Length: 202
Image (cartoon, helix red, strand yellow):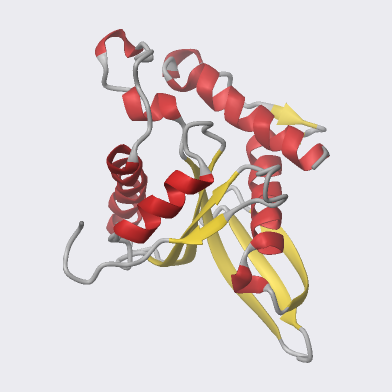
């Protein structure tokens, strides 16, 4: 835990504060002279690389942010190898307010709660937005990283969601990963690979 978590939470909190009032968003939130978005995305990707089994054999790496898609590029070297590899990563966040943008007066429903169905629908909805945007531009990336610190999205619930649901994303992304904020019980940032469906959505 530490500075990285503070930066990430500041970024997500800023999104919550301004997501329902797009006309009043500040021109650019900054942290230490840099875009807060860039700082948060870099730290999210670094945390993901450190916690994902996908990169368990990586010896060293560097995360580079960009103002144009993709959000980040990870250059890394595997243990026992002299060659270097690179992957592209788009980053997005699953936050409750974005799932209720279309509700009356943009007010949060106090009775809203996450369940397996709403979580799966929200995840596919985030993926669909990326697919619609980037497929038109004929852009393809290695990874989409979805991050969340929603309290209602427990590790147990997300295990259930990702065991019982498949997702459509291969048109633009090779893989989609989900990362939850720090779990003090398991002392890690839980990460999952979303299974791809080849025959439509479930």
